Length: 88
Image (cartoon, rainbow, N blue to C red; front, side, top):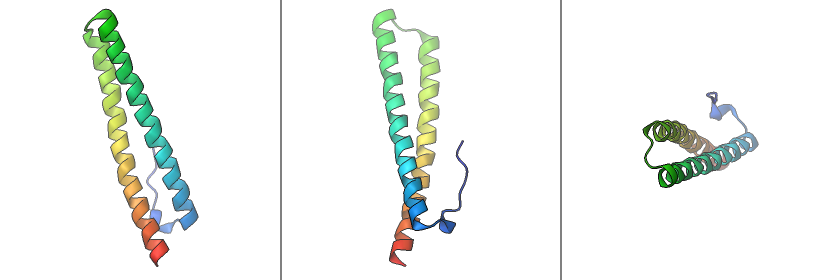
């Protein structure tokens, strides 16, 4: 789990580094969600509707999506701090 950092105390370079990390994490989450959706589609096409494995994969997708929302909030905070430091 990610730690809660005080972005106002970080320097501009550190903020840019944090923004890059979050962007990479968001891309990774999107790839994993896409893969899991592909597994669901393949499983339904190959074996029909199986409640258990679809339910487990949907839970994983929901967890990743929730984490992705938290990452977007942190990215907004970082961008606000970057704009404040670059203007001031």
